[in-house]
Length: 131
Image (cartoon, rainbow, N blue to C red; front, top):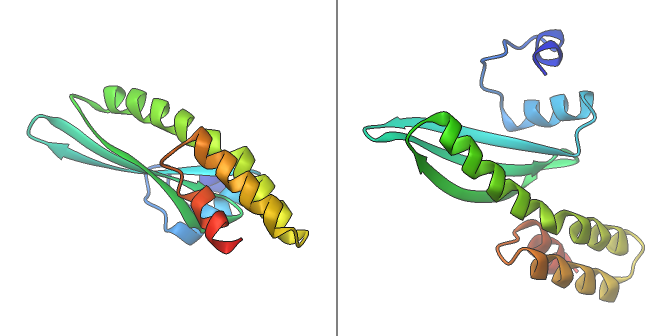
């Protein structure tokens, strides 16, 4: 990843805009992007994360904020939350494909299945609203 950042003109420790994240995601052929913010607190760190789709970085799944004693502990919790949020991805993709095919009822069915897999699903709810 550091090589991809450097080849694209970014320092490995730089903060990227949403559009730059999307462009870099396409360069490395990513399907999804994890965007995180880390803030130092008196008791450790607070991390906020969002799962973005590389195909459309304007669609995001917020993950619950994490308070932890250090970045490693926060990353461990974020990984669990990310794994749970990714359960909606397959149903969301099926929903979007059904919409492209002009089949709104299948899109609704797939979106609801994705929401059942991850009750906090934002991405699948966006597809359901579109359907």
